[in-house]
Length: 120
Image 1 (cartoon, helix red, strand yellow):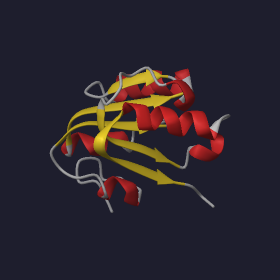
Image 2 (cartoon, rainbow, N blue to C red):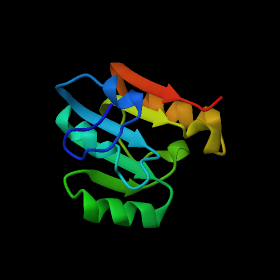
Image 3 (cartoon, rainbow, N blue to C red):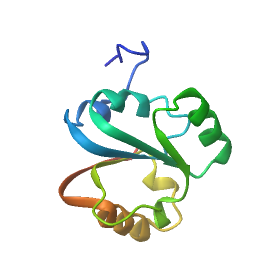
């Protein structure tokens, strides 16, 4: 799929996010190039990554998205905050998979959608 706003090819997970949700979190968002497509589907888009340089670049490039530096194992968001949490091609990079998944569950609203992909 190609994002009509940027002309870039998007990973399929972004097609799975429903339109009209309040908040979406993209964990491991890198430079934010995929997260920007979510601004057409959600009222608020958040992105987090452990790489501070990536986040600085993303903040400049896409100021409409709320980017932060952080680890999946210790998310800095309140409980039941997100309608959708995306972790695409990231779980294999975390130091503690159980802690990361527990954090995602904690920040996801009841009945929310969790999208997870891995390369294996």
